[in-house]
Amino acid sequence: MSLRLAASTDNSDGDATVPASKSAPLLIEATRLGKVLAAGASARDLERRLPHEEVAALKASGLLAARIPVKHGGPGLDWLDTSRIVLALSRGDPNIAQSIQPHLTILEQVAADGSDLLQHRIFTSVLAGKLIANAAAERGGAFYGDIATRLTADPKGGFRLDGRKYYSTGSLFADTLYVTALNEAGKVVAVLFPRDREGVTILDDWNGLGQRTSASGTVELAAVRVSEDEIIRPPSPTERRWHVQAAAQLIHVAIDSGIALAALDDAIHLARNRGRTLRESGVERAVDDPYVLQTIGELSAAASGAVAILERSAGFVDRAARAFFTGTATGADFVAASIAVAEAKIVSTEAALRNGEKLFLVANASGTDRALNLDRHWRNARTHTTHDPIAYKFKFIGDFLLNGRAPPSSVKI
Image (cartoon, rainbow, N blue to C red; front, side, top):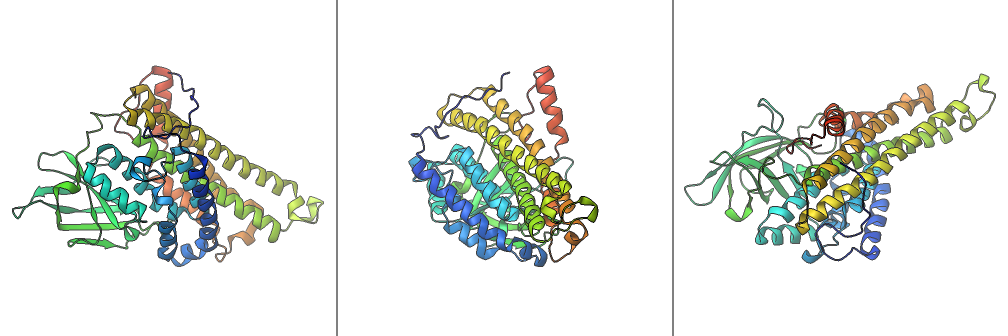
């Protein structure tokens, strides 16, 4: 299968081409806000202080509505510009960028599978600055993705939701929760409802070594009342291959690429302001030391490579998304997006980890001062990338290229 990308500027829901007048202000705002987030990111990590004020600013920015289709009153940005927004936010603080990853993919499912009523309610709330967070992952079970949470009929009418979710990224910042569960027929369903509903308890118990302020704690659900119009019953992965798995991974690529850029930013600052050199170097300033120059060059090349492949893979996701929403998709569109994003995830993972470690070559021992908190870049990268091991991405890419076998449709590759 060819992975050549056909150039297109159409947005993914089949509406008119998104004009620069809509995308440019949001990209400018993302860059501005990313710089604001960067100013306090280290202190928030050291103190493990959740960024409630910063997330409030993000909600007010209009960035959360980037993917809402034009026909629903949104800007209808494509995945390329959406990934650039996430990249800018992650460069500032990857915790905050990660906290909106579920939000963006959930909006895609609402657009695809939500009823007219649910779409109107969710899109209207997001346009007003509301954030959606997921409560999907669970501990236990034989495999990743096993679900014990149950949605059952309530004798009083409607349904009730019972279960316990972990790694509920952004849940403490959310206005709406997205919960996956098994219904009485054993089918996976999704439910969207206000986070302050009776029976919902959100615990601030995330204790990872990195991404410490992403609010990825526990959500407890005890007889939470749910109405029919809050439920999405999507096709199973075996019944439908589509672009959302690749889109979800694209956001992770943007987050990791942002970490790589943030490490480069700090390395440059260190070399200019704190760097010292050896007498044997033959130069007086760290910025003239050939080994410092080499390190900065390596960090820059790794970060730039990650950003370049992020943008390349976003084009494949856009083509698949557009084909899905216009009803013109073939399985090849979705497979091509999955493979392209898998390649990008490998590159961005390695760039984030490498840059988070190699920046210390610029500052030497002084860079290990805890007050500088430079290890947060590696900790963030290592924590973020462990939930999604790249080993299987190598496998699926190789199997596709050598044997023509598409990755399983249930795999978020």
